[in-house]
Amino acid sequence: MASAMNLCGNYNSTFAAASVKASHCQSHLLPCRIGFSVSVGAAVPISCRGERGGSGSSNKAAFSISCCRAATGRDVLVEENEAVSETERSYTCVMKFGGSSLASADRMKEVANLIMSFPEERPVIVLSAMGKTTNLLLLAGEKAVSCGVSNVDNIEELSTIKDLHLRTVDQLGVDRNVIAKHLEELEQLLKGVAMMKELTRRTQDYLVSFGECMSTRIFAAYLNKMGVKARQYDAFEMGFITTDDFTNADILEATYPAVAKRLHGDWVADPAIPIVTGFLGKARKSCAVTTLGRGGSDLTATTIGRALGLPEIQVWKDVDGVLTSDPNICPQAEPVPCLTFDEAAELAYFGAQVLHPQSMRPAREGDIPVRVKNSYNPKAPGTLITKARDMSKAVLTSIVLKRNVTMLDIVSTRMLGQYGFLAKVFSIFEDLGISVDVVATSEVSISLTLDPSKLWSRELIQQELDYVVEELEKIAVVNLLQNRSIISLIGNVQKSSLILEKAFRVLRTLGVNVQMISQGASKVNISLIVNDSEAEQCVRALHKTFFDSEPSQLENECIQGNGSHPAIS
Ligand SMILES: Nc1ncnc2c1ncn2[C@@H]1O[C@H](COP(=O)(O)OP(=O)(O)O)[C@@H](O)[C@H]1O
Ligand SMILES: N[C@@H](CC(=O)OP(=O)(O)O)C(=O)O
Image (cartoon, rainbow, N blue to C red; front, side, top):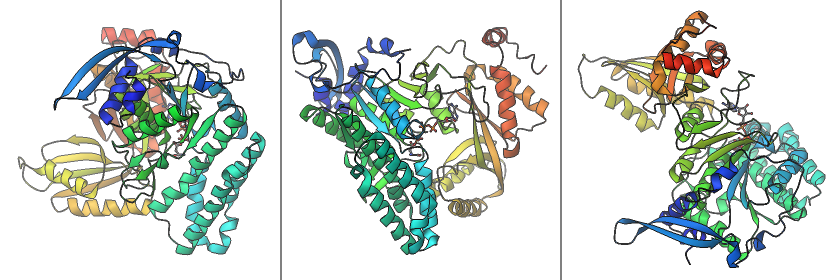
């Protein structure tokens, strides 16, 4: 009998994708997940995971499989209805917990209770490093470069990391040995950095990997101590294969079948909850440890979701879901109940820290719903991210701010009507491997923004910018404008006139001049470029206008096409 699990076990990405579709045919699964509520502390041990479902016919669930098979040289859609036992289906969802959910031993206990409060789930757990450990590791690395080998022991961040992790294992009552070797190796690594007086990106990735390697070992040991069988995995040892772009590696396609094979194989051999390091991978060429860019554990979770074809991916944070704006700028920001993958991807790409910019890609490809939940408030419904939603009443979903953006005004030195100007400009960015965010063009000029946030090193950015300008000046007059911000209005661009009218009224009232505007092809984002110094004030005022009024009023305005708002007029 073919099951979703066995199909994925063929280690073939087509079949892995097929099992994604398979799980989505179980439409009964989704409604029961929407709006679920749990009570933390009401722990229900998941002690008999391997036995759950058994092999008897009474435990079999109707299961519809729709898969693609390359049988005759072309893809063929095969529809089958089969009965697959719960056991054979192995995992039921991915649950990712970020650093904010894992800041202390108490938080780890609460997360363990939360996982145990879903006895019907057989989750794959993805964890980030505890609290701010990644930042501390980066700072320790920077200090090691110049402090001298004999002073490494005195690096404050190293002591903070050691104290946090040792205190956590002690408070959880697990053996210090679970992380002893890692702490020792971390210190040795920093001594190596101090000796070399150099921290390459490759070493930096290896250095920050200690955070996730330790948090997952501690958590798996704690679950086992609680009688819940768990197995720790380092992503770089379990099939996460990436490019060699240290600090910002891309996950390669080969990851999906490799991860599916490993997780399914282990489940069949010896069922246990996998506790996987987020954020990490293994470089295809050098085989060194890589990282997926800051916040990359979200991407680890969606990659596993797609690899296994799971019905849901849950991303647990310290906020009640994706909010109408960054709560650090707009404390009154409210959770957004539903988002499309496109909206979430745009929101993440344009600066909302809550999701990793690339994390929606595997979910979208596998059409797997992503639920953003609050580990501090599990009863809150959170945000459900799916392929489509009813946009008929939607105006604005969220306002996002991306600071410290560099803008370039590029004016052709050739005459009007010269062809090939745009192509030349973009080939320069391509050659230099620089990503362009927002673009506005006329026949002889281009304004665009460059994204420095993907790079972790300041000097390199300046060096790169100098080089870009030098290259562009061969064909154009270039004006480099730094310290700009992109304010992205994510929502229903079908209502762009309404959105823009309201937005520009606010900005005019504030006396802010928009330096560039772009309405992307995505149809969910309008970007406005303003000075960094004005940006937060603009976001707060825009938020007040779009979200502090009764929803019915916004809807009325949409229907009547009347953009005026009492807060401004
Ligand atoms: N639009 C937004 N919606 C929700 N949170 C946001 C948004 N913009 C910024 N944030 C910030 O993102 C944080 C959650 O993301 P992150 O710190 O990466 O979580 P985790 O470490 O749990 O993965 C929130 O605490 C909040 O301050
Ligand atoms: N620990 C990594 C990866 C990550 O995803 O973290 P978080 O889930 O806490 O944002 C970072 O800080 O970037």
